[in-house]
Structure formats: structure tokens, C-alpha cells
Length: 246
Image 1: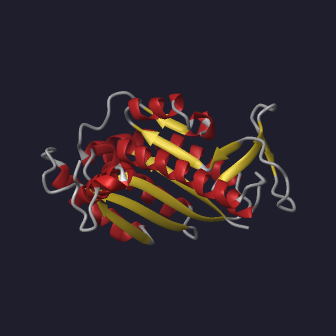
Image 2: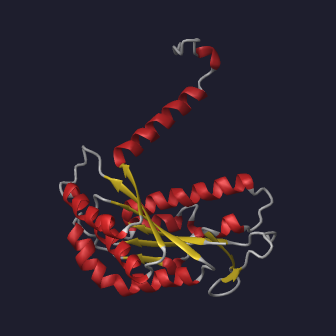
Image 3: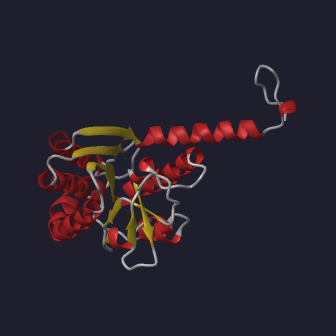
């Protein structure tokens, strides 16, 4: 049985991370009707007894124990508090362990150097300790999944700093990165520079990079929403060739 720790960095990384955990819970619920804590669930979630402080880990055992309370194997990092605070107030709030959060107030000003050079050095020890706590709660740590953007200051700068830290402290653990690249019409003037500077770190310290363009994500959302609207229309209002009569 192996586990993975998800490290969400910056506004984009934490927003995508929230959707990831929501989808993971939904998909597992469809396959695990009985609501038991099994090995697939343990790969990304801990089953805990919240009556203890800190919550007591409940083992998988024979894979037949009921789910008590799930905590994501996640570390949330952002140099602005807004997005993380919204997650803690939303429907996914109970999934995140508040001891696994690192936030600041001023942000990185869309500057790779601020995220990497300033906040990286300033928060290195705290980030290292927080990730270490997450790894110690794993039976067999297999990989890290880092979620961040390439255009923002925190995502590109601090995100790649964290990646370098993981390579330094956990050289034998796989490092998978989902990097969101800015679209061509991005209005942040520094995003191309941030992306280029972050690319060097990804090439050196990531085992696998899953690049996604921001515009591609927006196009997918638009397509899904348009298809959903078509499906909601009355059948009588659509001809065989797809022409809408309403």
C-alpha cells in the first residue's frame, strides 16, 4: 500500500487542488457504496478519529473499516490568504488539516524572484516541517503531486522552490507536477518571464510534468457548459439535424 502527498502552491494550485479532492471523493463514492476505508482511499486520504487532538490515524486493516473522518494528504501553500480561507469556509473545509496550511498576506506580486528568492528562503523551514509531517503519516510514500501555475509569482517562484526542496530532501520519491501555463491573452505582463524562469526548475527537478494551458481549461469549461445547456432543452425543440427551434 502506497501513498501520495499533494502540494498545492499559489492561487491556481489551490483552486485546482480543491476540485481534485472533490472529484476524488465523488468517484470513490461511486465505487465504494459501503463507505469503507480501503487501500485506494488511503492513497490520498487519511481516516482519522477527530475525538483526539491531534486526530488519531485509523489504519486500513482488512479494508472493511467504516470511514470515520477523511483528511486529505495535502499541503496548502499560498502567500495570500484569500483562496485558502475560502477553501476552509467552503464545502471541502473538513477535508483539509489546518496544521498543513502555510499562508502569508502580501503575495508575490506576480514576480518569480519574489516567490523563489524571498518567500522560498523565508518559509523554507516551515514548508519543510509541514511536508515532513504529511510524509510521516504515510505508510509507504510513493510520490508528490505538485499543483501550481507558471504565470503567477507564488505559483511559479515558490512552486518551483518547493519542487527543488522536495528533490533535495526526498530524492527517491517521485515528483509529478501539474503546471498551468498562461494563455496567449494573459494580461499579466510578467507571466511570460515567470514561465521561462520556472521552466528551468521543472526540467531539473521534476520527474514528470503534466503541462496544461489556461485557455485550454477555459475552453473545456465552456464546451461542457454549452453541452449541458443543450441536454437540458426539451427534445421537441431540437430537430434531427440539431437545429434549435425554441
